[in-house]
Length: 271
Image (cartoon, rainbow, N blue to C red; front, side, top):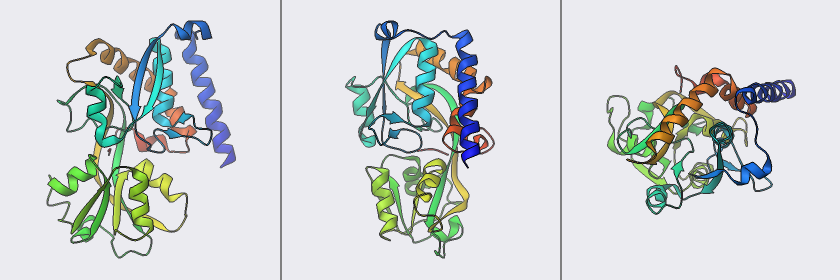
């Protein structure tokens, strides 16, 4: 494990060094003069969260910092209550949403940059649960984050042949509340991003199990208010594609201990 982390860190440093050849670093004085991009997300590890020192970190945070550096912006991160995200955008408190946010099915609701990664929405149960497939969720109680894609899948059932009618869908404001519900056995299953589910499992190895079938595979993007920032979103899309091609995105994903194939087209779901 230590060797993998060291290798990932060296790869990340190399990628940033190579990237800097085409995008020279700026001084602290220059950085202060850069246009601020206010980025909103909730606490959703490993994508965007606060570390033990209170600093923003995560896959999306690192991607945003590097993309902004290349574009000549200074990122400013804000934690928002996820079900209030649209109000935060409308009020101008943030410029965009960047935190494992699904483009798929929402293409007409925002001005998007991306997709920059792909993700699978997965179902997690207790290790000794009798739930083995999605079909076994029929009549069960499931916890999800409010306004997330799993909420839509379970409540609206766009693919009823794949996803059965569950007994109850409990929608919580934060993922910590979702995790608490399964820890206390208030629900039979929870659902969310695969990366988030696997991060949760690390706290108690052997206690949890992820079903093999995914609820949804979708692209993740950066959402600006619809009809705004068309030029910036196009530039950001191009930079994110550049970061994929030069290996920066891969190195950032590996830095957090994940297999990059999990986040690129061919696997992938989202909140």
